[in-house]
Length: 164
Image (cartoon, rainbow, N blue to C red):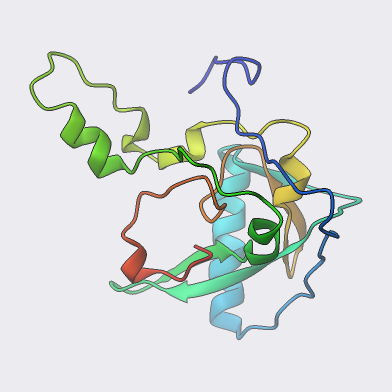
């Protein structure tokens, strides 16, 4: 949502203070997966979804998952971060629920039609909690990534791991 301040809408993480931060060690992949990961990181950097990060407390692995139609999907393994966050009793709705609820209405916003919840900013204080590691360095999300416990999702969960 270009032009909307993160003061108006942003996703905040509620991390239990009793949980110690977890820094996952980088996984090794073959050359094909590294190339797909580099391409995805370049694309996400170019559109401003991610930025380079330093001095991280939480660190997740990037996991490459084969798409059904070929190619690769890059996911972040937020398993440890999700364990440290309480379950939201009213999570964001799925896109299909939003479309169904719009039936019969005169107007419909297509905010979620492209890149789903990536259009909602992460709270600036929580951005570095979404950090992930690649062979090129450390990055964190400026926008809400898929894979967080309370972020919902656009894609059917049957086709992707729990952390995608």
